[in-house]
Length: 246
Image 1 (cartoon, rainbow, N blue to C red):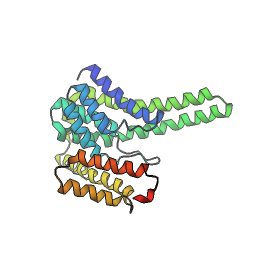
Image 2: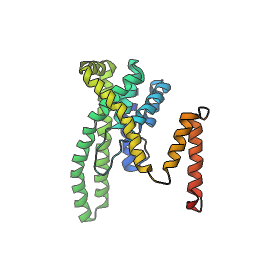
Image 3: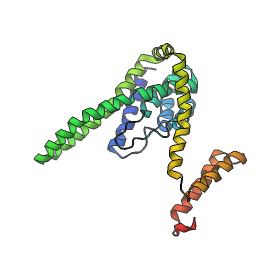
Image 4: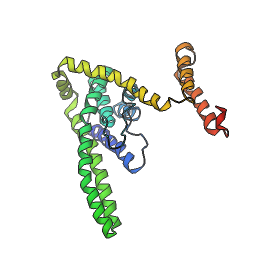
């Protein structure tokens, strides 16, 4: 990777998280978005798409609920995809790096949230004075801090290069890496479990079993075919004047 690619990937990582704070949660920090973008920047869109989709399944349940700080999916996705492409380790190597990096880098977001408490006090002081420009400055100082909390770790990790990170990974006990891979596999099931927990209603569970049956026993449909059917049913439900029709 050259300097321009490293900077662009790092900037996109920080910007994707910044949009969640400034523009509403557009889910731009998800692996399914950042993986293909990283692959596109590095000239291997196919690997980026494959790894992004796989990591999305793993991190599907990684959502910030309340004040919790989940694994940093943005940094994990971009760094894991970049290392997978530049080192030639493929999807499996990218998963090992992404899961490890995502868990480790959650501490940076926690650090940013801690320092943002100071900006909140500044905003309170400006509010008492009726200084709306000061309040706006305090808010954007916090946003900038969160941007740097994603930008800097990504930039440093990619600047070290695949060889340095590979050496660090090689120094880790193989049993630990095996555990990380096992946890990564379990996280996929956990992500689906969290989604099913929200869908476990009398109205929606039948559709889940219908989709499962189509995927398992009707091979001609494929994933896209089932997605189209699901979209049609969802649209029918959403636009129906009589919700009791379903």
